[in-house]
Length: 375
Image 1 (spheres, rainbow, N blue to C red):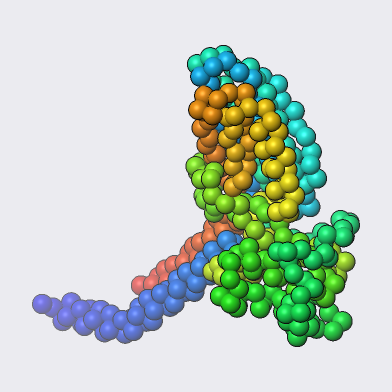
Image 2 (cartoon, one colour; image 1 turned 45 degrees about the horizontal axis):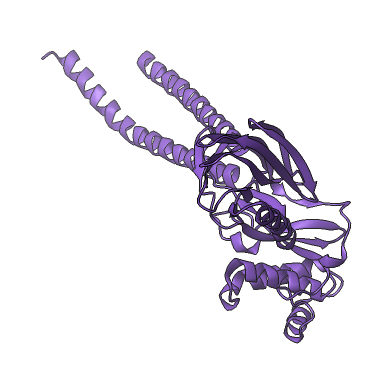
């Protein structure tokens, strides 16, 4: 080997040894930078899914098939949610071979369907409507305070000695919000001391509020599943309706749900809706409407089908008890979820920033290597 080649080989080896620590440092720098970008992506996921306000849209489809062993006029009444300050019900589509009409009942809508069915035949009702909910602060004004928002009942003993003493111990002077916060925290943290499950917890929160003159009421509704957009989900139509509360303080009504306050990095639902609380009405109102439907059904015939669970309904006909048959299914499809759009946008922005940093680093490295080659 010539002296020139040996010298060049030695210089290349020395350059490689000198550049090795620099390459190691550059590699560590890339790992650190990608780790930071990964943490930002994780933060974007958490913020987008559990924190940032967003609209959520659903399509709910209820399907009823009624068949008879003898010719009869069949009746079906379905209780539907209606629009209120923090939910919008729109675009109803009803497929039914007979006649139908909608009867408003306060915060509820009752769909009444009637059809004549021949012996051995069946009729099908398909009821579809859109539900738009909002994830964010649920407060509203303009709704009047009614006497029963402050009244004592058997389920809500707001005037009992124990409730009055407990409320007085947690009341903060000159701050309705702070007082309700204390009631909320007590019910949420000490839920195991409240016998009777979620309904008893909500009734206690309402009783504590009413005990100090703060209007409050329990409400029933459906806690919708957190499914992915554009995928249909079959819902269990026989499960019980959920319960939460609405409390009025600082001249505004607020949605308050201490029974669902442990979701990962999610707001504690004190005055906050997660876009999954679909409200019907107060339990007493719902029970009254269902009771009137059942009275009407019992007066018209021996065959009745009814459900006071999720998606309540009553069906009946002037038939013997075993001559009518009904099957029901409920399908939910989430058609829009603003949280996923925010998540996708945040991740794309972070990836583009990372790509720009990598490109800039690559240009600097190429420029440095070019200067070494010139030397």
